[in-house]
Length: 441
Picture 1 (cartoon, rainbow, N blue to C red):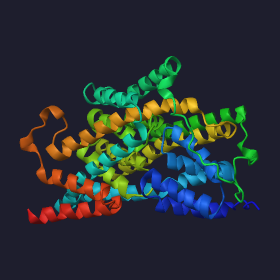
Picture 2 (cartoon, helix red, strand yellow):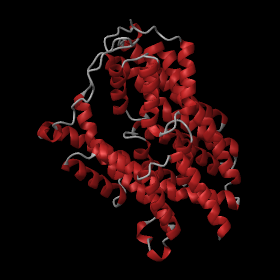
Picture 3 (cartoon, rainbow, N blue to C red):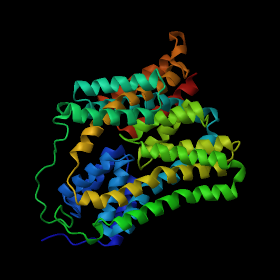
């Protein structure tokens, strides 16, 4: 006997709860959804869940949030998708807004500043852990290691923009796919288990009326996307004409970032840091690290750290005013996640009628390999600032090395990697470490 369709009210309660407990990055968030949706409630079968997850992992953007949107759409149509996707990020928006206000208002108080000083070395260790995790998943062949090395060289030494690297790798992969297909052998194999789908409401054989592909609906969705994307810009144009150039720059920048976020937040952070810190001067590299620490301690996708960048952009451009800063955070959130909803509502009907696209997966295996080199660049970018107090590797000198920070990076790495200390708990320990150093000195 198959499971009955959940009511919208039941689903709403779960999506709301998920928004408050979705700690642990995409792996933890996906695990929470799998435990509830597949194991406990049997709203969706394991095969159907993995099929949706495979599609979301191919898209730019936060895969866990997109997976929630996808499942919500399968269960209750567009209304369900919007509800699941919005509630996934809404709690973290307000939590991060509160933390950002506290940060700029009280961050200059010596003991509060010391708390964030303690966090910075721990964040370096967290980024190193992310680098190891991404490398293990992405580097399987010699060509992958070569791509990682080339992408690192391009972004670290030659300052090639992140979008250019990604587009170049995609083009290279397409060419090699046709010339040397053996380079990709084995990369598209499926790891899905042949599990029974009895007793689930949604299965791979379910006929769901609202999921059929309709070209006219696709055009309508594209029109709605364009209208929604333009709407905030129109408001800025009429209500803040003097600052319109800034708001236009912010909107275009974070939209672009949303479209190239392959491989998760750590992949796009170097690009955001490169532009927001180096080109736009919205914040410093040390403030970027503080934002990453706040992003790690809030529920929701880590890509929410971009919202902190938007907050600091509005704050610095307005002469340290909280209202424009708050608008900057909300606008950044809007432009970061709007494409994710469009990808699901426009693409999911096509995916529902097709098998997993191994060609696209093969191409993106090259992209994820290149991202390893990009994340290594992010590690060094943060390391320069925290360990040597510079933002240019040419200025690195051992006499400027902060040995206490280096020791805490090592301790943090060992604690989280070897002894599996919880990330959020260790961030708290690191903040206390910074406070201890402040009172000891």
